[in-house]
Image (cartoon, rainbow, N blue to C red):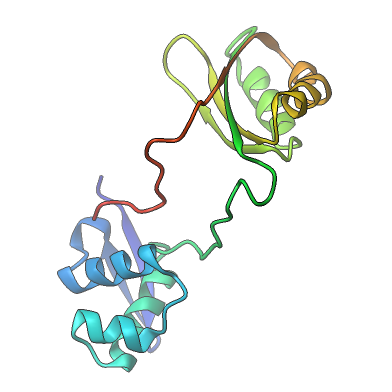
Length: 170
């Protein structure tokens, strides 16, 4: 994918292409993906830059939109959301109004971790993080069954997570 980002350095605009990330940018991004809270001085030491040069590169990556933000990854067991449910949802039609109505409504369900428009048998794949089957029943009753234009729901409960990451290979 060739995508160009605009970044400003000392008031001078320049472009940064995803394909044009240099090896140091990739190392910085890998470090931030593994631990976004580590001090810039530690990152700089690992990638072979001065702290100020590393800081400037991180700011440029943020400004360019390559780094969208920083988050805390929570332990689902400790916040009582240890059951992952994947729901395949088929709609009554694929009109723009139907898709828009569904997408607007699904945003109101706080247990939705992600919702993807799909190619294939189902129109959407929704990932829910729930406490237990009874909690899923509540969500099904209060949210999923009330979503507009739904023709079919097919729910799948994860037994255990084998691989899950927030890190992209660069």
